[in-house]
Length: 132
Picture 1: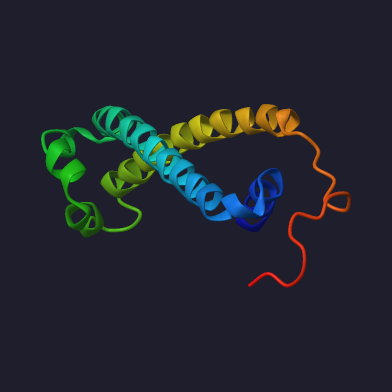
Picture 2: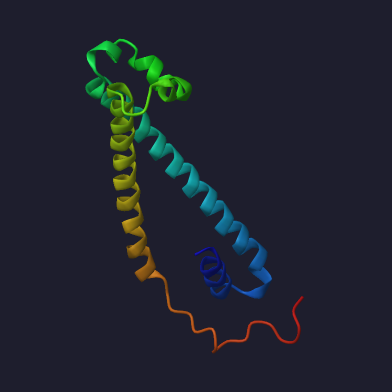
């Protein structure tokens, strides 16, 4: 995907603007990554605590915030125990919602894909001679 994006953006511009175009692509990638991280963080922090409170057994319900705050505490519970299974199911719920959000947002990329113009690379020669 990265190579295709770089070739596409370079084909859309001129040889003189190659560095600027690649920088613009990089900035767009960083902004997209930041937005994605913000969305996934919001989904995570709004899903996992509620799922833990709903799924944890009564004996561990009072410690839900300690469990939420520490991976070491989460991993300290024995595999197969009710508490560990509740933690796993809470993680699964949060991951499922993040996957749904990511898939829905990436579905928009199909729309953008159809809006990109078709560039015939064999028609135009942008630079003459050897380019280093």
